[in-house]
Image 1 (cartoon, rainbow, N blue to C red):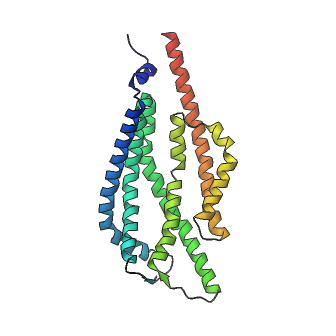
Image 2: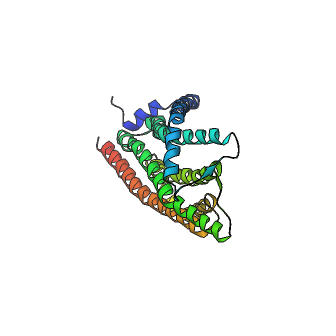
Image 3: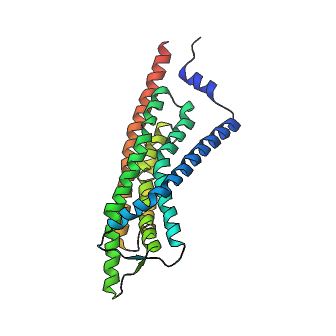
Length: 259
C-alpha cells in the first residue's frame, strides 16, 4: 500500500539522539569550511585591506599602528570577514539539509532557493553598510572632530574596528527576511506572530541601530530605518509564504479525501 507523504515523513523521523548526531555533523562541516575559508582569507587580507584604504571616504587616509599586534589582528579580521562570506551560503545549505527530511517535496525545492539568496542578501547588506552608512557616519564624526579643534590621527585598529562594527552587524541583519521566510515555510513562524511582535521588533531594531553606530542621531536613523523596513518586508514575505503553505496543505487534504 502506498503511503501518504505525511506518513513517509513520519517513518523518516529519527530519535532525538540521532537528530543531535546529525546536527553535530552539520556543524562540523560548517566549521571545516569556515577554517578553509579562513586560510584562504589570509591570502586575500592584504588585497582587501588595500581596497578599503583606497576607497576610504577621505583622500590620503593616514593610518598608524600603536602595537606590534595591530597588523596581525587586522589580518585576522579580514580573514574572518572573507571566510564568513564563503561559509555563509554553505551554512545555510547545511541548515536546509538538516530540516530537509521534515519538508515536503515542494517545500524542499522552495527553501533550497534560499541558499544563493542568503549570499546575495549578505553582499547587499555589506554594500549598503559600506557605501551608504559608513561614509556618512565617518564624515559626521570627522566634522565633529574638526569642530572641536582636534587633529585626526587614526590607529589602523581603531579605524577598521569602526568600519567592521558597522559592516558586519548590518550585513548579517540583511538576512532577516530570508530567515523569517524560511521559518515560515517550515511552520515555526507565522505572519500573525510577527505582527503581534511588531512593536517589540521595532524597538529591537532601533536599539541595534543605536548600539552598532556612533553616538549620533543621523547614524542611528541610517541603520534603524532600513532594519525596520527589512522587518516589514519580512512580514510581507511571511504572509505570502503562509498563504502558499496553507493552500498546499488544503490541496493535500483534498487529494487524500478523494482517494
